[in-house]
Amino acid sequence: MEHFYEGIHGWFNYQSLYTEIVNKYPSGSHFVEVGSWLGKSAAFMSVEIINSKKEIRFDCVDAWEYVQGEAALHNRIPGEQESDSGDGGPVLSLGESTFSYAPFFEPFKNLHEKFLDNIKPV
Image (tube, rainbow, N blue to C red):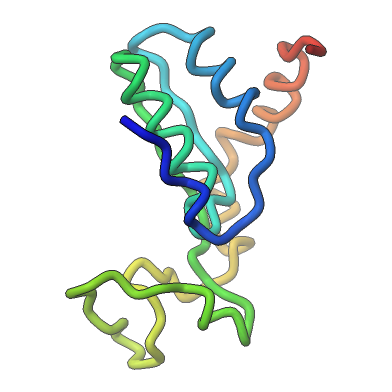
């Protein structure tokens, strides 16, 4: 599958890291991306997983809440319904800040440290 992440607004410049992670871990692995924004890096990772032909679970976590004035950056998906609030926000909007989901993040508390300990300089 060809990559399409470049057409998604956002910040993502660690393609080689994501490719290395997919290459390193076997089928049955579970990846979690915390802070997916509009999905630019998630789109890249998804295509890498598909192209690897590995069975890897990939979950994306985000508050899906936008700072005022950023709504114009979010293109609506054809056929997408309006949010219950009627504010034109995305259907997946949780309507609360990321901090209100602290109990959800507890299992991942030290994940970044474990991740960084296993990354070797390229």
